[in-house]
Amino acid sequence: MNLQHGKEEQDVAERRARRSPDIDMTPMIDCVFLLIIFFMLATTFAPLPGIRVKLPPPGKPTKEKPKGLIMRVHRPEGGTKDGVMVLNEEIVTYEYAYSRFMTSSAEAKDMLIIQAERAVPHEQVVKIMDLAKRAGVEKIGFATTGQ
Image (cartoon, rainbow, N blue to C red; front, top):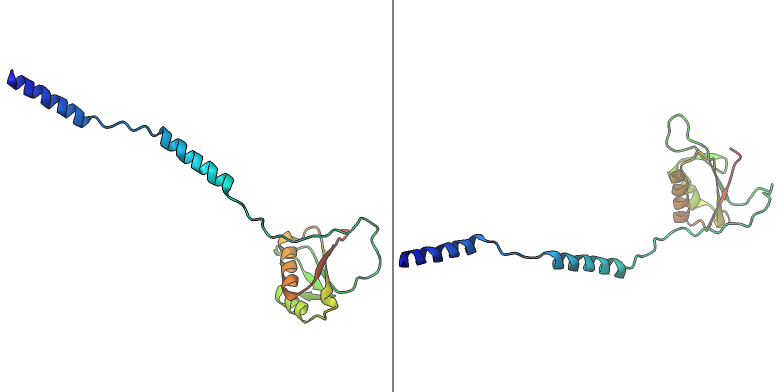
């Protein structure tokens, strides 16, 4: 009998060793989700800096020629990415336009008017605006063409 009793104890010990402990993961997952929700709600998002646009009141267009710099941008042609840029009746590149902005008089730097056709990519207009702001142009205006 002693032999059988020893075998039973050994079987019980083997069963305990084979059985893995049950760990309930549900409370831990709940805590992780609550932490995620807490950090999402507690985080403040900084507003992205943008360009302040002051739109003019609606009215009839004037025929008088504005003072300052005038940049006309024509639609891209022949598979090119950017349209042709004309600054005060002179065809320019980005680099040359920047140097012209820098060397312009203070009166001319007061305002840049960008006149772009509809097919001109927004990226090109934004690049021109960025160059003008870096060169010290105070105000940027937009004009439309009939095309």
